[in-house]
Amino acid sequence: MSKIALITGASRGIGKQIAITLAKEGFDIVINYRSENEELEELKNLIKENNVKCLCIKGDVSKFEDCENIVKSAIEEFGKIDVLINNAGITNDMLLLRMKEEDFKKVIDVNLVGTFNMTKNVAQYMMKARSGKIINLASVVGISGNAGQSNYAASKAGIIGFTKSLAKELAGRNILVNAVAPGFIQTDMTNVLKDEVKENILNNIPLKREGTPQDVANVVKFLASEDCSYITGQVINIDGGMLM
Ligand code: NAP
Image 1 (cartoon, helix red, strand yellow):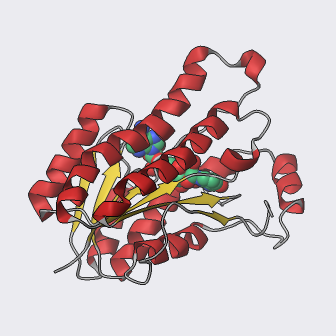
Image 2 (image 1 turned 45 degrees about the horizontal axis):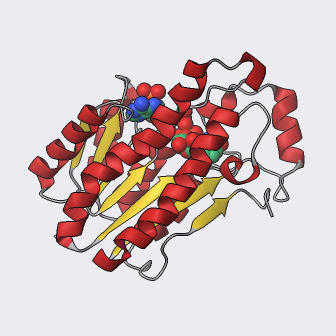
């Protein structure tokens, strides 16, 4: 019987690469997306080339009802969810003095509350199945902090605390909960940065290059696989050595 992986925010960037990578491993894929995107149909076909199924469900992870609907639709189609990847995330960078309450809350709502909303809805099925894997996208910034990203860093630090707490709570049901903490990965999220900012970040990466979405997807692939059976509550940095 095929394994089912649900990836949030998988229409582009890291989430998209995770979806493609897991499809190659034989997972049936549930893609959650927020906005219509002309590449979605192409992605669906790319996934299906691996002789796996692909279901795309629209929804905003910051809304609990949307998450209920995403999970219900996935369960109706496949009857189970083996792996949940909480990938959807946003930034809204600015210094604290300029940051309004809504600028702070918006990022927390998508990144942290969204992770709660999806996990809460999926965990009940994993608990009944007495098996499952939850993989959360944190960030090195959630460990180190970063000027101009107090909202984002707080959301990612929150995800790390959430990951460790749930790892303890769900271990008895054989559900593994881990996080990955990417550093500087080449996606739309980082493309918006000014060249001098990028240059400065690159100078602080021992491996002297940006990461790729595939670098992240490869670690997620391992955490989602049968090979990973004795790791839980961990945060794995994927950052070219930036934070060591
Ligand atoms: P990205 O290219 O900006 O893609 C983000 C994805 O999340 C998009 O598909 C977006 O959909 C989706 N999304 C945003 N808000 C959503 C919501 N409310 N509900 C559902 N989907 C939503 O970002 P990325 O670089 O791939 O980042 C993926 C994850 O890795 C994020 O959690 C990010 O914080 C984390 N991360 C990235 C880096 C990096 O350097 N890139 C570093 C550390 C951590 P739309 O197309 O609708 O906007």
